[in-house]
Image (cartoon, rainbow, N blue to C red):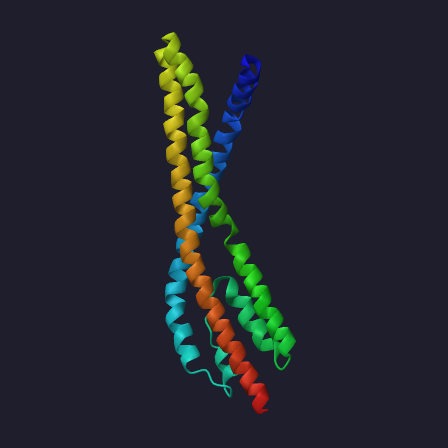
Length: 200
């Protein structure tokens, strides 16, 4: 039994360095995500009013002309899909394909923040629990310095993991709202295009 326990202890202790490395990498990626997210937020705030005004005036007769007036910035990943949807013209299956591909792209756009939201706390918990074993060993042997160091590592990994998870959770929630709005706009444009070609 002691042999099995020792094996588990060696395995868990050996996972500490990979866990810390992954935490650092995810933390750097989370910071980069925040920077890009705020840039996209500012661009969308400027573009949303113009997009809403354009869509309010959209009819079956002027759909192609008005869509040319959409801003080039602030549309995010939806930008090429607006133009592809109009370019599809009277080809209804192609328009459906464009909408389906947007759904796939929207899901892929959420992969990073979703991963950060899930893996940040998991890695933080691993980084907390792994050093607790050596810390307890240090406490039992009277090695207070070793115990203090391991506890410091445990608390630091917890904080970093929670920060990563918080960044991922907040960004994925906002991105979901943005992408839902983009999907609704694309569906509206597709309906106007269908109406236009039925009339023709």
